[in-house]
Amino acid sequence: MIGPPVHILIVEDNEEHAAALVEACRGAEAPRPPMIEVASNRESALEFLEENDFDLIVCDLAIPFDGSVSVPERKHGEEVLDTILKQCGGIPVIVCSDAEDSVGGLVRRGTHADPFGLGSDLAMLSFHNKEDLPECKRQIKEYVSCAAGVADVELTGVDLNHGEGRAIQVFARRAEGAGATLSQLGGHSAEKTLRVEVLDSEGRGTRSVVAKIGDRARIQREANKVRTMATRLPPDLMIGQADIVIAGAARKGGVFYGFADRYDRNVFACLLNDEAAACSAVDALMHGFSALHNNAVVAPKRFSMLRRSIVGRDGLVNSGPLEGKIRDLDDLEISTSSCIQHGDLHGENILVDRAGKPVLIDYAKTANACGCLDAVTLELSAVFHPGAQAGRGAWPSVAQVSAWGDLDSYLIGCPYPEFIKTVRSWAISVAESQQEVEAVALAYVLRQLRYSEDIRPLALAFAKSTQERLSSLA
Image (cartoon, rainbow, N blue to C red; front, top):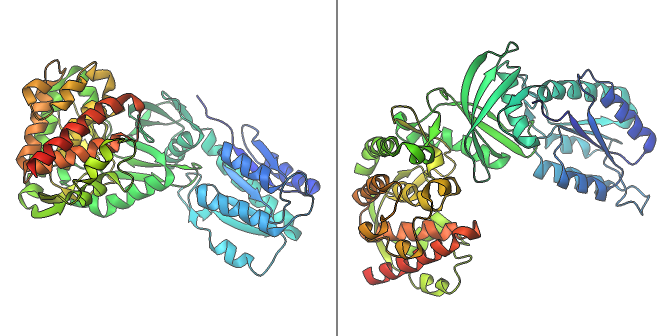
């Protein structure tokens, strides 16, 4: 399956000039003709940007406000450009407009990156005076031809949207691939986790990686964490970063990790048919994190601070009549341990090899946190995360989540009881107090209330009972 052809937006109100730019796009060397949209005013340009992803944008700065106004004004074009730079920073932009002194400052806002997988950086924001149209057309042809090379990288195995596909295609082209075979390892949230096998022109596999594809800014944060906080995680549990794509994929980006040939499933997949492998993975996690837990700092922490560190300031959204009772806990001081935690250790972020050895991916939330955060997150993700829904069936009931503290009652009918026991034991062993476990569990479940309505009855029942247990421990 070859993805969509090169998609170009031209923002230009002068019909003759727009036609010249369209001609330049069509004159580029490309196996397939590009898709070209022309916006003649601010309103139509913003509408195109809201509804589409593009590979290249050519933009005039002096354009009318909408179709009922014919007078072009620079402020309208600048607003379009601001929107492009803020929302679609991964798209190369060529400004073709009348020169002014401020243009130099405008172009300096641009960066250099590799949006076409060529292994060398190009200007992401360029300026051409309309009087120098031939040079502008030359650059358009060059960029369209380069983008066509990306668009013709063949992807098979998983359906992706425009930006997601481009992130994989840019990576594959950097790896000198002609195509890539994809299989899904996870991706029930805003990101997709994929196994990517790069293929040469003969269809032979040349490289296998794990790809995390998602919002461009989110991917950039994850890559930054790999270079900083994530290096403090146990090295045996890390998987090396092979590459990052934050240009050329519209609003999306991708971070790529090596050695995918060894890790072909995640913990949720193990829970479907190989609980023993999931338990082995947890044992390895406990061993790998032991040095960090042994050196954890013990300190009291107010529940309000703990809650906000896990959930954020809007953490009581959809909590209904529980909101007041939970706020009553905010001044409660809880004895906690603190050390580096992965921060989002649900089952899709743990890849497992055939021997049950785990590695971790997605380090965007890695930070100092309560020492039982990862263990509690992993256990409760087996109930609340979308990736676990196929495996857990009708378990647990509302009554069972209300009895979470009574493990025997909680596990009746559980499809993977040994896994839950193993993770719960890990959480209790590394927490400084039972209060810490309960408080972290309550905060995790409050975060789930912002997601699917299907799990809210369970989440509310869990939150109510946990709030009551915390109150009794106060």
